[in-house]
Image (cartoon, rainbow, N blue to C red; front, side, top):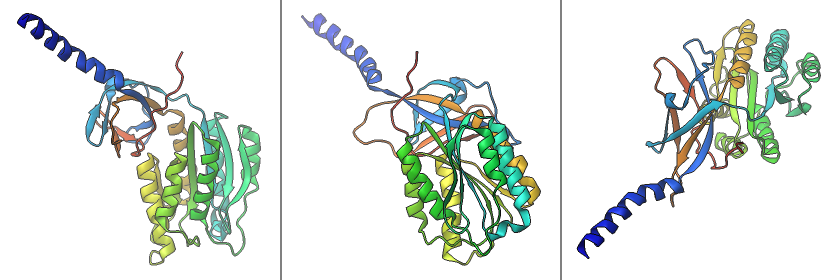
Length: 296
């Protein structure tokens, strides 16, 4: 009888890890991996990634090129500050669209004077390019970027896109949105969109105003916690190359799938890194939902 009890106890101990693993849910997160030049790195596998939730390591199940469709809100500055650089802004936006090569649904939204949908989401590359050619600076208009991010985020929430992205091409100038940065970031979080910002000029213009401080917080915090890219371009001529580089990054992202055990208290933060030296990983810090793509 004693031997039977010992055997049952050993068997129960052996089965417990399997039961715990059975409760783990596969969770997807979209990740960019860049080299020292800021260009995307391809060919990585699950063994190249490390995922931690609240500093606890999770098992990485697989890593593969992201195939979920991209939904891109392209926010373009058409305030009066655009006057000196309209051609460079157009070229930057066009290079971004051409590099995506019809592989994303794109909306063009301007934010001079007020948020304006110049073109709703479409995969028609020529329609997007034609819309960008019609962008002109609005005389006497200021930037309303924060209002536009809020409205764009609300629109993406309704779309429930698989891989939503907000890309901002802006000039460093005054901001007129009367928004507190936390309000903007909360709407951005609800959209599940990655925020990428290419800003042209020096970032200290009007730094003493509340509007500029709130915008700077949104740009810094929003890009960091959503896994987005933040580029500061000092010269207008540098915008096209940075925008094309950003498009290449989006086209070469990974979907990393890891196992998350069921817990009563959900984790608050996720961090993704790579075992390969010299590479930069960009991924959202907000813990994703446990919904996964259907696999054949």
